[in-house]
Length: 123
Image (cartoon, rainbow, N blue to C red):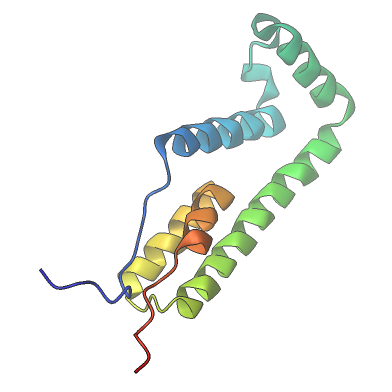
């Protein structure tokens, strides 16, 4: 089997980050858009804190939600730039990095930043 030249390098982020970011962003979305659906009283001190934020800082929470997604968009853009820098040229692979980084942020981008492609040997 021939060695890959790195143009199609892709690594899926860990299950921990897939679940954590999905639940975190999902919960944040619910707090901002449908707080009446969340059983705050069953979440103990965390629920009380979240209820306080919803009652007193709804506007800031809304802006924070948009800011979180803006950061993910920026990270996805950086992922495309890193793909170019690291010689990842396969279009499907670049799209995989873009989508994964958009959805999971630095949990994905960190994997791409750590990737060190093999450099051709100097003669």
